[in-house]
Length: 130
Image (cartoon, rainbow, N blue to C red; front, side, top):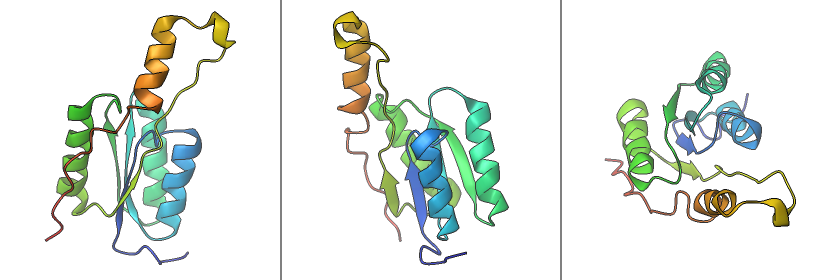
């Protein structure tokens, strides 16, 4: 197990499945503690947390919608309060509309833009790592 990230803490948005889960697990394998966010799918998030903890690292799952600036700020604050710092941020949360563009509704496209383009862009206040 690599320890090049020993003592670091990462927050991965959308870290409960897919690429985000893979990133969270890799950062843990490299020594980082981790917080992951998810919108729905608490069971999947809990599974990732358990896998990270099995590697000897600390981990938490935080329900937070990446399109909600207040929720993102709260996730940052909870990460620091629980894990002691925040050194790495991976804005991974994203979505797709699994159909042809011309078949997508305006609401589906708005949701895609809100998450993929505007999501986590509220520039949460960085924690002070004193």
